[in-house]
Length: 227
Image (cartoon, rainbow, N blue to C red):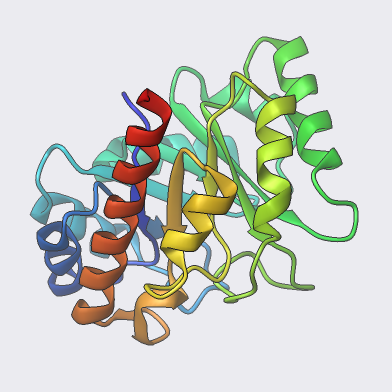
């Protein structure tokens, strides 16, 4: 499947999922990490997935889960994409093949070198991720912190990984997503806390504004690339 462009992550109920769909996002994230305030059970995830239009990508977010558990939830919930957001080794991509895998990285002082090294090892093993997601590093946290990635460094990562789409996450909000797209030139954007009224609960107005601003910025970027 084609990569999504605007993903709203950490959906916890059907009402929020429908609001996200109505806003025009093309992907939702369902978090199966029990340590997250946005954690959903299999039953909740299945209800949310069933309420969404078929064209929307249902992305399962996992943190260090066994491959067989990930595969089972993909099948039972109807997930389209697997997002690995922990410390999963490259071999797990092969174990989950042929599923679509987005590998997330929490980028700290070492910058993007671990991303480049990891993707290289995946390619050597014959199972490269469909995309990489770059998030900000916060000790003890696996995403959803609101910390911001250095957008200016992302184009260099894209040059070094020319065949790997980059999903930009980390501190994206309605008021900064357009500038983030202009500076970083990602293939897609992802937010959770940036459109919430409280952890796990989305504000429909913030969702609407985020999606509108992101899509407008992508359209502008596409038009510039075409000229």
